[in-house]
Amino acid sequence: MVQKTETVNDESAAKCTNIGDRLREERTRLGYSQIAFAALGGASKGSQLAWEKGAAYPNAEFLQFVAHFGVDVLYVVTGRRGEADLSVEEAAVLGGYRKLDERGRVGVLALISGLQPDANPRVRVKGDIGQVVHGDVRSPVTIDMSKKKRG
Image 1 (cartoon, rainbow, N blue to C red):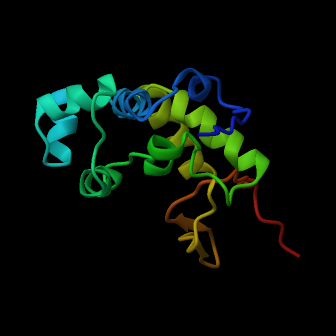
Image 2: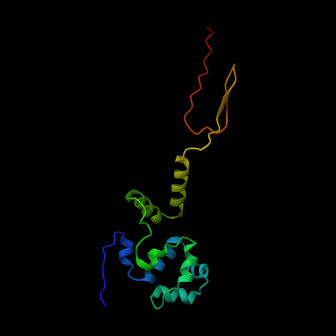
Image 3: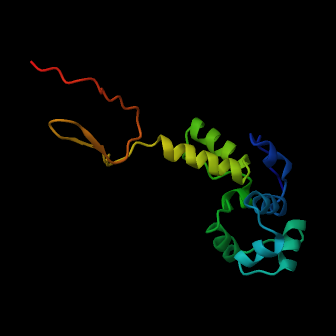
């Protein structure tokens, strides 16, 4: 049997040579214990241990179940991350995000949500004598409080 070898860019993927190693990597990346991870896919702890040791392989039904919880099944099976449709920049951002702990991920998500423009700005300015600003203001605002010039 001829084996084809490929260069893998992701350092952690290069260390993982079999399905069991990659399954363990995905489990730890998502923060699950062996028991909790096995339960996500309806399997036993014994099955999870056997898979991670490389003594057995998970079936397609298990992989389908755990995919709903964020497991990159393509990576577990092939060793390639499921990022084929991403640009180089998007893949770099995603790779960096995956290496973050929970606190870092929360910070990144907060940053991203704060940078997105509001689809429906809710600022209204009204009145003849004075101005009343009502609503969410998320950008720099300058209000001139000097006397109104009569002309």
